[in-house]
Image (tube, rainbow, N blue to C red):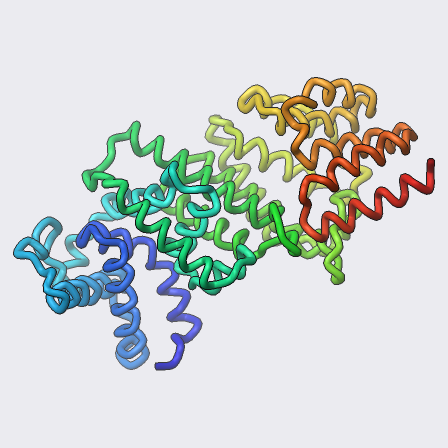
Length: 413
């Protein structure tokens, strides 16, 4: 069997979350739901190119998938009398077109994402599970994204699945409060997934593009499910604005390029335009949130023709507003960087003094201090701060960047 054509693969990727979620509701078994969906896609590869796309591809795949799942249960002697009970009979596409409840599917997809957000899983395992179940990436693709061997990733995903399925999450439609809590949790998972892709926590690669791209796809899915939620608009806008700079952030030799020194001609302007439109739409709702504010900060950078004309006063105001919503040391650190641009490095260093206990083990705290010391002409203090950052296990591109900065400090001692 040859691989599906590009248009078929794209269609399967779009349908997968809803189909897996519906089959999961039907069978209460994640592995069986994935197996049934795979069987329906295999059948579609054989039938659709010959007969054309059905009127409702989702209904067609669910019908074939449901029957494949029941056949599998029969073969394994696990078929129960109630296997066809619960949801409506899904034997034909026509029946399904009439019976599919899109609101119910929305809750099913959210539940499926929420299953990946088990608190007893690490963030890495949550992300890997979401990429496998919802994103549909292969184990090999996920392994490459996380820079581990496929066998290790397969074992990780298998353990995560077992843990997730022990959650015993009820399948009734969640109430508004529960839906909001789930959406908040899932949004955070996707946010952390993008951050890990954009600034890898370990390894030889600074940007893990597949993680960024899948986080963007999941954010699009969430916004499709909940099109009126302004924070989801902000989340997707933030990802697009960040990812628009990907080509300028790393040199062809794999070296890190600071934002102020990036070639802005390499920034993806169509992606920026989409993000700006999303952000403007979100802000019109009048319900600002942390993701919208972070997107607004990135949008200020995107609007500047070069680093010298960046509106740092606006960025400082936005970080101050973000800190009121999320009074974390990391947000305060970023606020300090904006303060340095507006009021000077001395004012910023006074802020950093209040963060030293909380951020002593945070690499970017030390690199930020080093930048302020460098601006003040204190090469010795800058070198010491950079050496602290170097000791905290940066990625290899970051390590090389830090060593070059340390060498520059030594020249000025």
